[in-house]
Amino acid sequence: MTALLKLEGYTLTYPRQTEPALIDISLELAAGEKLAVIGESGSGKSTLARAVACLNPRGTCESGTISWPSLGRSAQAGSDFGMVFQDPGSNLNPVLRIGEQVAEAAREHLDLSWKEAEAVALDLLKKVQIPQPEAALRAYPHQFSGGQRQRIAIAAAIAARPRLLIADEATSALDTLVQAEIVRLIETLVTTEKMTLMFITHDIALASQLADRIAVMHRGRLVEIGPAEEIVANPRDPYTRHLLDTHIDLDDAPRISGGAA
Ligand SMILES: Nc1ncnc2c1ncn2[C@@H]1O[C@H](COP(=O)(O)OP(=O)(O)OP(=O)(O)O)[C@@H](O)[C@H]1O
Ligand code: NI
Image (cartoon, rainbow, N blue to C red; front, top):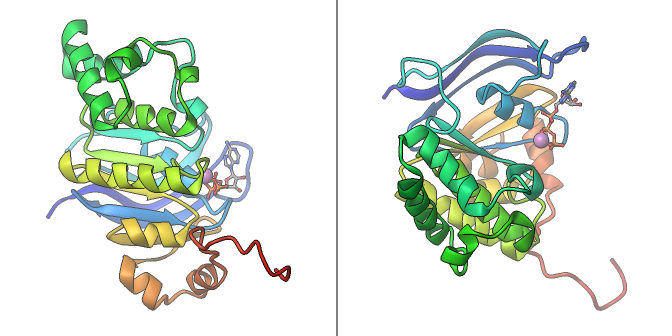
């Protein structure tokens, strides 16, 4: 099958930096696949996501290629890929009503009238389980909780029916319970909307729960990639083993009695 997304020997150096932030990355993403990208802070996960989304800062130096083989052209934000970031604030415009933000994404790419786009927005708010979706259309981001804002951000990201959803630590700022709900929502949407997923997280347990394959980044390099169960059960790279060994399960009940930590 032709890959949706393909990186070949991709190296990226930020402006005014001497060391590259991504080094010789080669990977393919099949349509419909769920890929998790894991690695410690500073390993290059967000840089990879932004490079795929053509969001590199001006003056970034790149070599190698990023291509979209099954599109046969360069990818467009919105209709080919949508993005959700960690900070619920940065995903939404604080002064625009929710309905406008979600409808705008649909209107722009699907060539709809405002009225049609608003109907799409309402449908999406229902899909991401926002309570009282009709009223939500007219509300502003600050009127929602962090988890609800992430749901709305997901609705906006998928409004133009992108093939690829890139979620960069989209659940990390949320508490464990809400995080689990959002992860389930992403999982459901990816399946029902037949999307491909690139899920970025530093949480290897979350990655193995959600993804078909896991890619492990370490200091700008892709050190390991393979089926999720294999990576977890039998990591080949010492760094992946280290990630597994040091993983603290977020779902572990807090030990509040007994005194000793
Ligand atoms: N705009 C930039 N200019 C220069 N260096 C940058 C820029 N953005 C990121 N970097 C550097 O690139 C490296 C990779 O950063 P990146 O944000 O991709 O890591 P990450 O794996 O997403 O980390 P985290 O888990 O903390 O989000 C880091 O050393 C970072 O300091
Ligand atoms: Ni990051």
